[in-house]
Structure formats: structure tokens, C-alpha cells
Image (cartoon, rainbow, N blue to C red):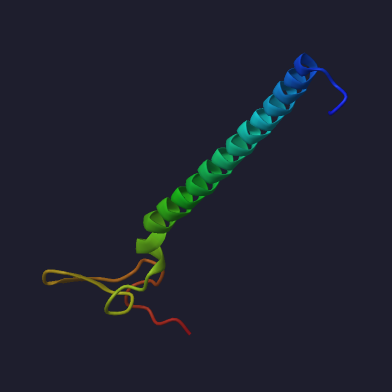
Amino acid sequence: MQFLNASSQRRAAMRIGCMQKSHKKKTTTYLKRYIIFISLRAFITLFIAVLFSSFLRPREGGDRIRKGRFLFLPLSRPLGKSVG
């Protein structure tokens, strides 16, 4: 760069500056895209976990649901018949 005249040096410096700016711009774009992708994936995972949490946790009192005086049994077993 010592052998170039002043205008050539300025052009070379501008070219290097433009290259550096475009490189930084691409890096920030990829970084933003990565952050958005990770946060979106975390939000979807959290939403699914909250949605299915009522189905995944065991109910209190075993498999019986108590409402008032009535006692509801699950429909997987026939009522009044013993399996065996």
C-alpha cells in the first residue's frame, strides 16, 4: 500500500471498509435469525408443555375424580365387573 498514490489508497481503504461493514451486517443478521429461531422454539415447547401438563400429571385420589357427592370412575373399566 506504500507504493499507491493517495486516491488509490483512499479507494482501497473504502473497499476494505465496505467489506468489513458488509461482513458485520451479515453476522448480525445471522445472529438475530439464530436468536429468533431459539426463542420461537422455546416458546413452542413451553406452550406444548403447558397445554399437555393437565394430561401428564397424576390426578389426586388415584384415577377417581370427585365432584360433590358423586363419584366418577374412568370409562376404561366396565362398572360392577371385576377384570381377571
